[in-house]
Amino acid sequence: MSADPSARRGIPDATVARLPEYLRALTGFAERGITSVSSEELASAAGVRSAKLRKDLSHLGSYGVRGVGYEVDHLAYQISRELGLTQDWPVAIIGMGNLGHALAAYSGFATRGFRVVALLDQDSALLGQQIAGITVQPMHALPSLVADQGLAIGVIATPAASAQHVCDQLVAVGVRSILNFAPCVLAVPDDVDVRKVDLSTELQILAFHEQRRALAAEGALDPVAEAVGR
Amino acid sequence: MSADPSARRGIPDATVARLPEYLRALTGFAERGITSVSSEELASAAGVRSAKLRKDLSHLGSYGVRGVGYEVDHLAYQISRELGLTQDWPVAIIGMGNLGHALAAYSGFATRGFRVVALLDQDSALLGQQIAGITVQPMHALPSLVADQGLAIGVIATPAASAQHVCDQLVAVGVRSILNFAPCVLAVPDDVDVRKVDLSTELQILAFHEQRRALAAEGALDPVAEAVGR
DNA sequence: TAGATTGTTAATCGATTAACAATC
DNA sequence: TAGATTGTTAATCGATTAACAATC
Image (cartoon, rainbow over all chains, first blue to last red; front, side, top):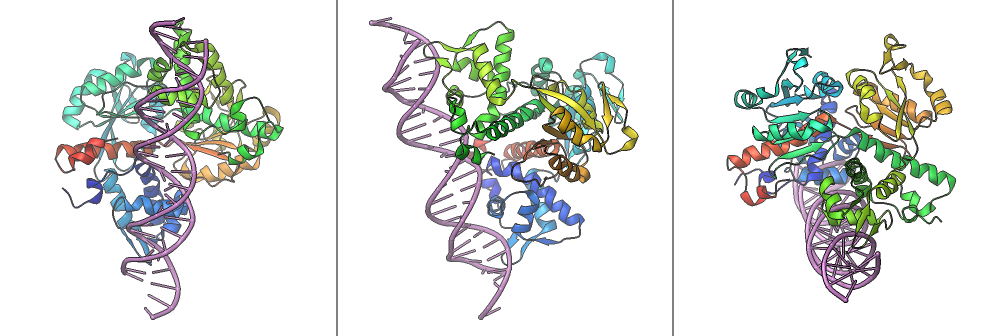
């Protein structure tokens, strides 16, 4: 049993999903030379209500000072530690099409806490090519990446048709954290964590609300129901 | 008041977010020549429990047949209609860096229901350049895109520093659906719908669970709490 | 101390789930 | 009719919110 409260009780998924935004807001305050913030100020910067922020932070521990607020650097450190960003996680991107290419160059992946250690592709025509200063390797490089570099996170940027096969290979070598950009559901064992980023799903959700507004403008919807909107 | 039940009562956000996945699964069945599915089969393909699927579909109406299942084409049409995909939504992508470039070429955006009508950038060096067969235009093309093409959805793929400014310009010309790839919170009026896709947030959430597994392996976590996992 | 703001409580709200009556 | 599967109910679970006691 640890002294860290979050180690004893699980942190709610909804809270974990917001911690990165709080961290980003804190980084913004730090860059502007602000050393202390209230829950009201931080919540506003992160786009949430202050009650929700305080509730979320209470799951990590008690890092504020009543009557004063939160020390920016200290809270940022505590959130970083909770998210596991005080170490660097080795990441491999698989699939060097348009999207994989952009991801390899995207600075969001080179942000603190992550390190792109490999770019992989099944297509032998791409092998040896340099993208963003990294040489593209074949899929059979996977086992040594795990053994030698401690590869922990796999990013799948292949077409949907090959995503499950690539996923199986990642799981087989012991990767248990997968970020899936392919538009398909991946089947994995219970101990593997898959998160999905799906551009067309997001567009379709926007289209739903857009259509709703259009119908409301026509008077086709019940005004009470439509006022709820989203 | 309409005969469509979904027009009277709002569909829960959680349900709307799953409709695209159901639609994709149905498309997969249709491609394999399957004309009828049970809630159990469809749920399995979409990665949810059948009870949740039936509950979700019940918000749209009663499109199944007891003892039989759902007719694939008919249900796909009903979901498409509910999502507003029976028409084409004009989309503009703003910011032609690495990511914007990839998005312009990404087939997910050319999928049924959406049409990329413009690529925009603030950098005059890029203007006139062709990307994926579309000429890059300056930001001041926005008003005419709305007036002439019915532009409805804006995709922001700029750096965080210019995202709010771009967003303000979109809102000013009447765009009320925005997909934001920039790692920042956007301030918008209540009637504007912003969805955010954030690569580094997703990685950070994965890192949290990855660290949790590593700590569990060390025995640093309470086994009961850790068994809950994610 | 007086003022300010946190951390927590309790109420509310929405989402999930299992079970089953309805019905093809 | 008998078997199968939907659509709905009711219970449970988790997340959000407002209010405020604790306390700096």
